Image (cartoon, rainbow, N blue to C red; front, side):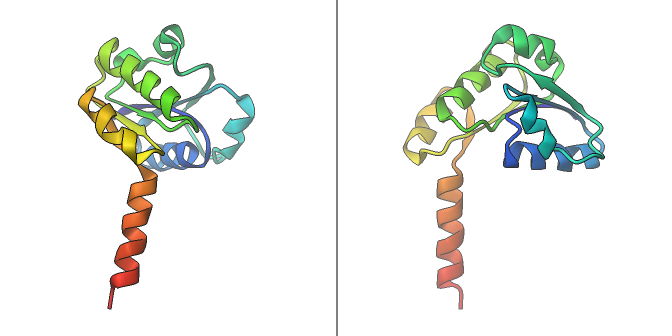
Length: 133
């Protein structure tokens, strides 16, 4: 699978590393070149400096040929903007987006963006562990 990841923080770098190790073609895009130091030395994908909310930058990153696109920057709005460009302009079949604010998740999903709220996921995990016997 050809995957473009916007955001090379802890989650983006970890996801890129996992997908690369599984043999997928991975391109990571981040506005800060220093963020790529989170990638392991064994990373065989591509790391590009640029703004993931810029259509031209996404084009240069190969989003038009991607099978999947994941936006995991630190900002909900940036993630949604990047995801909408990938979905609506480049017609990427699978678009995922991290949303910290669980109240926004349903709104973004109505726009056709598959949104994941780590806040909700973690709260559910804690509840399940708390109530486990």
